Length: 129
Image (cartoon, rainbow, N blue to C red; front, side, top):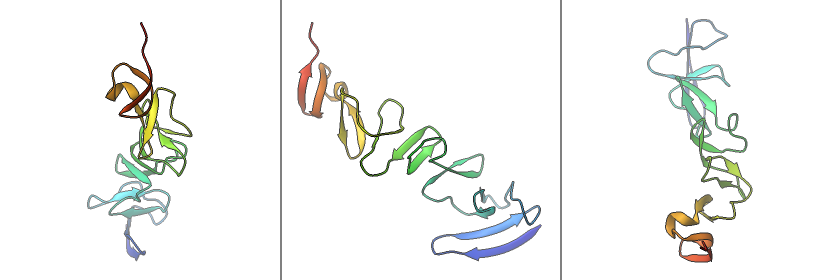
């Protein structure tokens, strides 16, 4: 096994691999940064951890900047929103939603009889019947 320490501006990277070319498992509870082929103490903010491997949020979820896991985006690029139905990045919220802090939110969550709203306090169309 090879052990070397690399220091980058924000993260210290540790190489502790079975062979010099491949990190499949890391020692001392470190995580595999597969894009760098290194063992790291923490993943980038644009990654999520799955089975001790740092994986990019944008691979399972197109356009996702930050995520909690492979199905839950928590930050999208500018002019995109996190969908309330599938937690993925979308260009617009649905008609029965409004945007707040880059998240789409269902009108009915705040106003049970509202199907179209501009915010959590202003209903534009109510359920009829």
